[in-house]
Length: 259
Image (cartoon, rainbow, N blue to C red; front, side, top):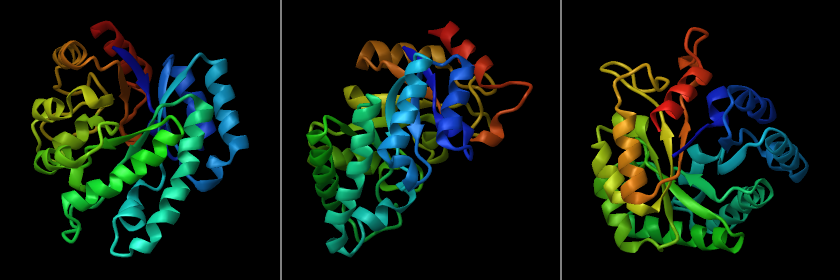
């Protein structure tokens, strides 16, 4: 298991600065969390590539800043916006090509969008995935509490309609927030898991740094690597949960010793 750190841990820093901060932790794997449209300009993406290369960091995936509005871009009642939205996401696919990343993380459609069936949802996700594959990139659906695919029931239905190229990101804190069984979600996603978003939790908090909560990482790492050949796990917690007393470097070292 290869352990890394997402640039998202350092939000609201600009992404180039966040990537430099990732390098200071000693991490060699990352997910680039883009924060704004200008960061998708190729000149800026090449700057990120140079920082990653200079520090021996492999970019596994990119995370769109537009995740929160994907419902309105792809899965709204206004179908005429779909072609423009897919065209916009080509910016992320091109960024992946430059960075050497293979996955674009998708949140999808809000759980509250009752007008959108899982069949219709997946049909549109398949269209986005097919465009991504033209760039040599995969769509990676994440389980997020406020979205349809944060729940086992909906993911089970998605599996009936999804192209085989669609991958998954398993996020621990999101599973806890949605009150979903962690290992049931892992088994459902199976060998389509591209990588894992790592965090820790206790009885009252669900976005702690690994080592500050109750989660058994040794058990999970062995399970997903042996059963499903998952190779990457990236620490992704909210910045307010990172303190001077216990930071990302300590958490990263803890996980490296476990694997």
